Amino acid sequence: MPPRKLLDDCFLHDRDRLRHDEALSILRERMRPVTAPEPVSLASALGRICAEAVAAPRPVPGADNSAVDGYAFAHSDYEATGGFFPISTRIAAGHPADSPLPVGSAARIFTGAVMPPRADTIAMQEDCEPHEQDGRGFVAIPPGLKPGANRRRAGEDLRAGDVLVEAGTILRPQEIGAIASTGAGAVSCFAPLKVAILSTGDEILEAGAAFREGAVYDSNRPLLSALLSTLPVAVSDLGVLPDKAGIVRTALTDAAAGHDVILTTGGASRGEEDHVIATLSDLGHRHMWQLAIKPGRPMAMGQIGDCVVLGLPGNPVAAFVCFVLYVRQALLALGGATWREPRRVVLEADFEIADKKPDRREFLRGLMIDDPAGSPNGGSGGAPGGVRRVAKYPRDGSGLITSLREADGLIEIPEDVTAVRRGDRVRFLPFGEAGLPPR
Ligand SMILES: Nc1nc2c(c(=O)[nH]1)N[C@H]1C(S)=C(S)[C@@H](COP(=O)(O)OP(=O)(O)OC[C@H]3O[C@@H](n4cnc5c(N)ncnc54)[C@H](O)[C@@H]3O)O[C@H]1N2
Ligand code: MOO
Image (cartoon, rainbow, N blue to C red; front, side, top):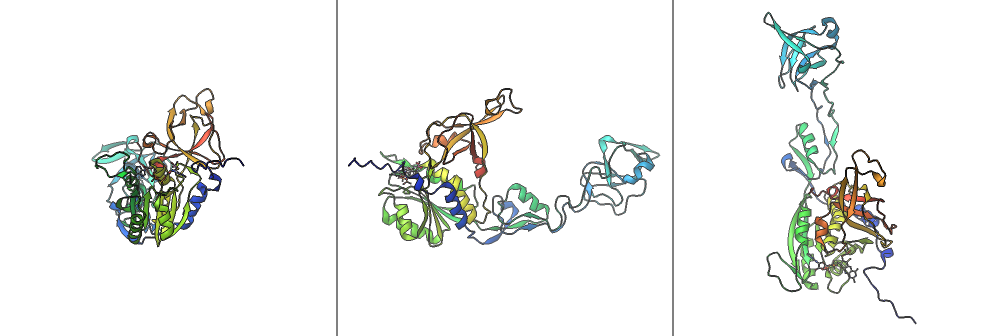
């Protein structure tokens, strides 16, 4: 009988692990809003998740108005006057005229001022020749203006009743500006999720502690706190837990009682010292564990009572990648946001991979390179604007935080691809798509 091959748990069985798309489907299926709506002033609404659709109570703008500083007139008077108008009135923004524009005359008007009744067209002041005659003002308006030129219509931005922000939208400055344009000073948002974070491992040291052999400073909690600060969540930092089953059990039980989500790093793998997964299965339910991805394979999701537990691997790169791919989506969905996958772009590979393992999806750290003279797929001539390629950080180790610092995003190599040649088109997830700031 041949000797039994040693089982290398790190590199076998991807076929039997949950695929990336399956993991996303499970999260998408199970993560439902768990917090209640509350009114939030627009000054505090950036990044919050809208809980009720916002509709415009009245048109925006509220009236036809001028897009320029100039002279307003009725286009029907244009021919009769030959473009030579007496100036009958002056209309500034905030001071609408109280009577219609007299026939055959023009109004001096300023940007944002309401059009007087009868006027429909505005000539820009730079194109006009105003002058005085016998103490009266006149203006010569050039020929060729179309009816309605330089006029902004009432309701052209929003009609009364238009929904400008749907429930589930993450509020950006643009949405806040739009809501403000309707006169509202507050918006109904889901209350922030309560998220507890903790690290595990006997080797993990708090910042500032004296270094000892075999120790590792905790980079995951600060990393996760920073990532969480991009989301509308309230974070409790529960520190570092030792690799002791009893302590992990007590900590998870307590945390589950007071939080919507517990986010752990470390202890997610199969070792005897990896207590998080065993404790999760014991205290509650494990809905997924072990994904066919790299890095991040030991990622787990489950629940203890009503509290969702997201167990991330201890390796910092794996924890980061899992956050970008799954945790962010899960937290946003629990917080009431509409599910939306971070978009990928397709770029030319400026790297080669000869022997990727099949059956798993890999997320490599990628750096965007702009080649102003380049043309797609190495053709000659140079495309206008050049070409953008993506280089791969040369080392793949899941402990190399340097690879994250050097990267602009994640190169995504699907399960069925086993080799990448230079010039191949590859999918790239820019970190900005996951809500991270640019460098
Ligand atoms: N036999 C197997 N071993 C491992 C497997 C496997 O499938 N079979 N998976 C490997 C993979 S892939 C990963 S990822 C890691 C994840 O393991 P754990 O989640 O159990 O994490 P730990 O073992 O606790 O730590 C892994 C690594 O990360 C360092 N670490 C942990 N926490 C922190 C922190 N807060 N800050 C900085 N660094 C941290 C820790 O010291 C370890 O070096 O398991 C593989 N093993
Ligand atoms: O999936 Mo682990 O993340 O490779 O180190």
